[in-house]
Length: 73
Image 1: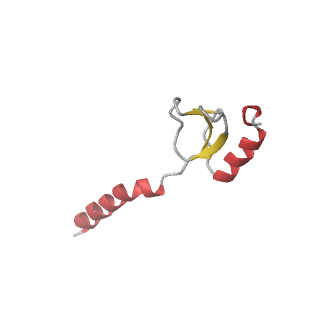
Image 2: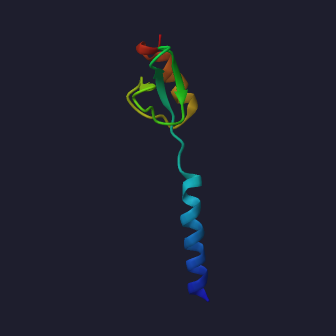
Image 3: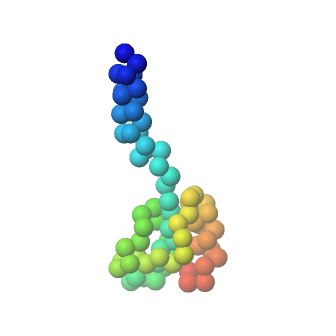
């Protein structure tokens, strides 16, 4: 009985992990318009290039970085 509960709990934990994964934000520069924006997917290097040097854990931090980056002014 305990084994079944542990297996069930492990399966639930395994499938719920992606839902708890931290969302990351990047400051990206559009290759055609040369304008910067905050995106939730990593820039691909073709249409969007990475304007910053790292990923941010919150959108607010990415917005602050967007205002401070010299490439985005």
